Image (cartoon, rainbow, N blue to C red; front, side, top):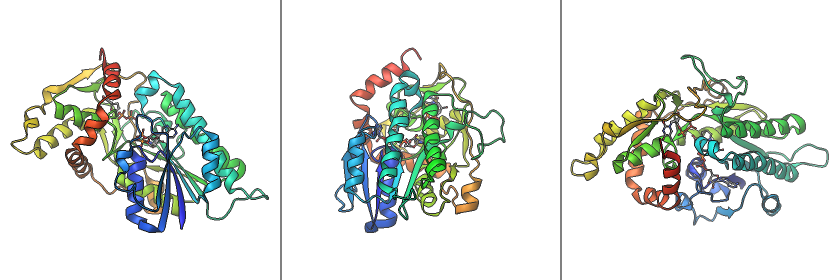
Length: 360
Ligand code: NAD
Ligand code: TYD
């Protein structure tokens, strides 16, 4: 039975990936999820799998070399899927250091422990061991022109502390591939959305605020463009890259779905109006009057867009979920999981929100 070490599996994409993998492989794989449970990690996301015999949760920090070494010593790990990271650009602008620690040092620790566990005395690696590093299209910088896209060959040009730390982590993985022929792949994907996303990111934040009748903060002129990818499509792509991708290669994963932020806000408001039952009191709260243009993010990248040509040509993956369908599924999930949203927005979130949006 193949054993996966998933880092950051209690976060948004990691938990969706774990659900996807158990749906696909059922009892034929084993998953060990290592997560430090920062503000973004939530074991609620994994309630449906926690009792499985082939699932284990380990609370540990990926920068803790001893704890990670122990995990590799006690388990014969076949696949590493490395999600754990500090992931929010706005937080990185306020507090860059933890991004360097987790994203750069944490990646170095995971890489080194995997290398130590998998390397043979002649410098080659045990058979069928694979490491996948999950990264972002933000490492490529910002596009201005319509019709231009990020490719795997686009030079790195990160602007935020978040994207700079992810770029550094990508370079570390690349250095292991080049120096040791370490069996790894890197994926750089566009903005994800879907169930379990923490409401500091645009889509869940707008859904939650609209349902509470709170103002909808749109940075700058609202015309920045992101290329939205439904998270389950991403989970599928990660698995396909790991099993079918050429080792050492980078694959970009995009949604073919560019939208301005203000368009996203309007789509969410229209879809909420459509989906909320007539008698639901929240219908009266959801309104375009809530839209508030606020001070722009510092160094705000204008446009991201991926041409996922390589992954389609080599692996046959394409995004399957159209935005109309994906946003409905996402909103339906938030309707069905009101308690989840209440839990994550109580306590520390209130303080975060006040600090981040004060004066905006
Ligand atoms: P997230 O913030 O929702 O989850 C991150 C998880 O990592 C959390 O469970 C957190 O507890 C854990 N974590 C953080 N620091 C840790 C540490 N030091 N040790 C162990 N665990 C730690 O992030 P996400 O949106 O699920 O993103 C997952 C990965 O995908 C990240 O590497 C991110 O850079 C990348 N990515 C995300 C997006 C997106 O749209 N969300 C897009 C492109 C790439
Ligand atoms: P975000 O979800 O933070 O993802 P990223 O910065 O990684 O792309 O933001 C998506 C876009 O939405 C980005 O252009 C910033 C913008 N945005 C707002 O306009 N208002 C908000 O409150 C947030 C969180 C983001």
